[in-house]
Image (cartoon, rainbow, N blue to C red; front, side, top):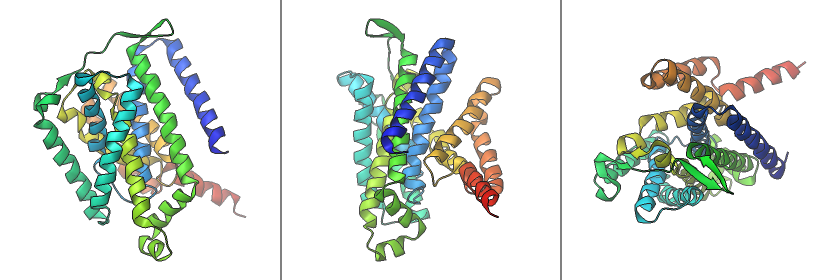
Length: 318
């Protein structure tokens, strides 16, 4: 299936999902579904750098927060429609991702991971001391109850859900296209053996810069609608540990070598977390992540997708 067919199929599935959620008319479906789709985008974005290239990024929350605070800045300066805010968040986070990659991608392994974590700390410190966006006390974003589209009044949370659904389709299509392109083969060469790839003529630095830019841009796009979703944003929520942890855990659980791994991991882990939030407390979400990671490291080190592929190969083998 080529990219055009995949995009068409994904768009149809997204449209059916939106119609089905609208038909049920349960507001919580949109609130929970938005979070789930947000993690699909974050996990897919992390996987472009962490899964395809093998560079573990602990700074996912920083790029997510950049997109969110870009929205806060524009809300105070000149409010824009959500699609334009998503594009703006992608541009801001993509530029920061490019700059960060240029400064840190000469580091490898744990050194690179620590550098990305330091980026998140530095950016959070800057936001805390920036009064224009509310500083440490945060900022309120008053959203309308409904939005008028073609003469119809659509609940705003449903509109945000639709925007995140469209963004999920874009992120998954982009990841699948990269995976099956020459760019994806270069990423895989870097992941398997960067020294050998460079010796073979692969422009490793250029490819890694592309990966950090695309990954950062998608994370920023996921964060752009967040202030309108939550209504109030502060550094502690935008730079929350759960974004960094979940964006790593979800691809690990689903599988990091395929575009479908982050999707499967995000749906599985995100659904369990949403159920736990309703029935127990959101405080147990990080515990759930830890337990599931330990379980999957033991049972399926290559994730669910890798486990299924191994079983299929064993079944086909004479």
